[in-house]
Amino acid sequence: MATVILLRHARSTANGSGVLAGRTPKVSLDDSGTKQAAKLVERLADVPVAAIVASPLLRCKQTVAPLAAAKGIQVVTDGRLSEVDYGEWTGRKLSVLGKEPLWRVVQQHPSAAVFPGGEGLASVQARAVAAIRAHDARITEEHGAHAVWIACSHGDVIKAVLADALGQHLDSFQRIVVDPASLSVVRYTDTRPFVLRTNDNGGDLASIVPPKPKKNAKKASSAEAVVGGSTGK
Image 1 (spheres, helix red, strand yellow):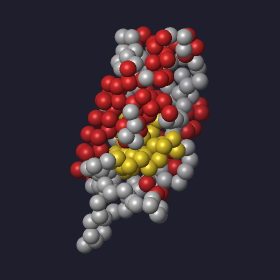
Image 2 (cartoon, one colour; image 1 turned 120 degrees about the vertical axis):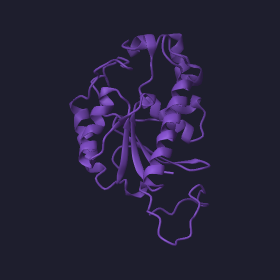
Image 3 (cartoon, one colour; image 1 turned 45 degrees about the vertical axis):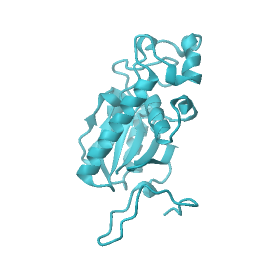
């Protein structure tokens, strides 16, 4: 299967504002986020990106726009990668929400959390994982198992996908950190996912690119873990 780079959108005008933006329209990147998006072009210059899929929200589309232009790729949007629908919590101050009884559920038992007038975190995980796996299968079919592609989404959505890939219960997803503009990398196989990076903010990405298969070479199972640990590249 292909390799997916889970990209959280760059810093937005809502990040750090103390307000839960959710799906509020027209939340854009701030000056810092615009610079982060531009830096992605250089950072991924040597990565042969086959496709880019993004949440339809503005901050995600703005994050991948410079990279898509540099790579000559048309961005595909998928609502299943959109931000959590926080319902009545949308637009409210986090300091106020922290006093709500549901806040403790979100922190300690997120699989049971359903936002009033919105969706539950378990449903978020189900839709996001289904989207990632569907696009991964499509891109593998179109470009081959050595392909690398990007899915640009939101913090809680990516954390939920990573928890699934790590074989963790959703109740553990709050242990995962995903910063704005960070990259997390997953390679799916027929039997299990391999998590290659999490919350990477500046490392060399050359090692995540799978080598193209050599002609007449004996095919090894990409689903088998290396006993004793990887030897690296």
